[in-house]
Structures are given as C-alpha cells and as structure tokens.
Image (cartoon, rainbow, N blue to C red; front, side, top):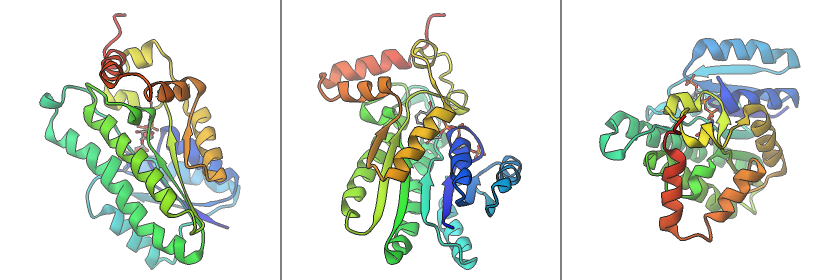
Length: 259
Ligand SMILES: NC(=O)c1ccc[n+]([C@@H]2O[C@H](COP(=O)([O-])OP(=O)(O)OC[C@H]3O[C@@H](n4cnc5c(N)ncnc54)[C@H](OP(=O)(O)O)[C@@H]3O)[C@@H](O)[C@H]2O)c1
C-alpha cells in the first residue's frame, strides 16, 4: 500500500481529495492546523481499511515542513504521493495589507510547498517513483489587482511545478500542477471575496468535482490540469490578450458585485 501526504486536509478541496485517496486505499498522512477536524476526518476515513495519521501543524511557520519530514522519517513512513494543497488568499490593496497577511501567503503558498517538495522528493527519486501534486489556481495565469500577492504566489506554483516536472521526467516522479477556478470551500470566506463578481456572477464549482479533476490528473501524471471548461478557456485567453487589458479585467472580476 502506498502512502499519500496531503496538506490542507481539514476542509474544502483537500478533504475531498482525502476521500478519493482513501477510497483507492492509500494510507494517509493528513496535515492542517485544526487538530479536531483532522481527527474526525481520520476516523471517518479509516473505514476504508487504511492507516490514517493526522498531524496538526501550522505549515506557514518555517521549521514546520522539516519537523514533519523528520517525524515521518523517524516513524519509517515513506511518502509515495505528496499533495501540496494548503493555501490561502487575502483581499485588499497591497499598500494596506497587514504584513502578516502578505508574509503568511508567501510562507504557506510558496515556502512550505517548496520546502515539502525539496524534502520528500529525494526519497522518491531513490525509490524510482513517486507523484507530487501542487495545487495552484487559474489565478496564477494573470496579475491580480486587489489580491496581488495571492495571484503572484500561484504564478510561482505554476512556474515551479512545470519546471521541476521537466527536470524529473527521467526519474519516474511526476509533478502535476493543478489549477482550480472559483470553488465552494472555506477559501472565499477566508479571503473575504464572497461578494466579488468572481464568486457572485461567474459561479463556483463544487469542491467534490474539483477534487475529482485533480485526482484524475494526479493519477495520470499530467503536468498541467485546469479544472472546468470555463476556467480552461479563461487561462488560454490570458495568453493572447494584451497584459494591461488582462490585468484590468482581472481587477473588475475581483471587485465587489453591486448586488
Ligand atoms: N476555493 C477556491 O476558489 C480556490 C480556487 C483556486 C485555487 N484554490 C486553492 O486550493 C487549495 C485548497 O483551498 P480550499 O479552497 O480547499 O480552501 P479551504 O477550504 O480554506 O482549505 C484550506 C486548507 O488549508 C489548511 N490550511 C490553511 N492554512 C494553513 C496553515 N498555515 N498550515 C496548515 N494548513 C493550513 C486549512 O486547514 P486549517 O484551517 O485547519 O489549517 C484547510 O484544510 C489552496 O491552495 C487554494 O489556494 C482554491
């Protein structure tokens, strides 16, 4: 039985991914900050006859990825699948955004993801196989006024993931960059964007459907996967339109809808 390490497993897309991994009988290491939610999910998923370990950890605090890696190594847990899903966004003008919101997004969305990949990749290479999925966003395909840092962190995830997928093509390790669009989870409330045109007028997909798309892409070892036809079209359109226009539209979409 293989073991999957999944971050951000206590809700939203991560919880749905955990259910899919459990159904296919992967042992699980589930990470998030909420110990109680993780414990509840852990006991729910054990019915599949798998081992579930839960680790309550704030991945945005720098030693956390190394702490997690050392803990699992100490328990002889080999990670075959790494899903870097934990992430958050914050809304508002960059000039007015509190430092902890700016650095928090960078620490979780970029630093923890990169550090977990750095740590868990070499054992995968040594074993001749493994799968990594980094959850980015369609936000990563264009600049995002009013969520400048969040969009930029997701652009990093896309660029980083595609680059290392290429580097690893002869090592038996696949890297999948998964890009959801607006999805019904706790994300919009945390980012305070529930009233944005994006969520109010364009509509959001269910976390269950998004997770199914991501899981399929992970199993197939696809380098890039965008969830939903509308989101795919959006990502393609940003490649041809003038960047200034793309940025203006991006701001309009992020602004609050009138009603
Ligand atoms: N929902 C969307 O519209 C959307 C669209 C595109 C991309 N995404 C991306 O999809 C991924 C999953 O987001 P979601 O929509 O499922 O959001 P969510 O419902 O808010 O879930 C986020 C998960 O990350 C965990 N998390 C947050 N901060 C953490 C920290 N410092 N350390 C460890 N775990 C932490 C949360 O658990 P705790 O609170 O228990 O720590 C939770 O399990 C994110 O990378 C997000 O950027 C979301």
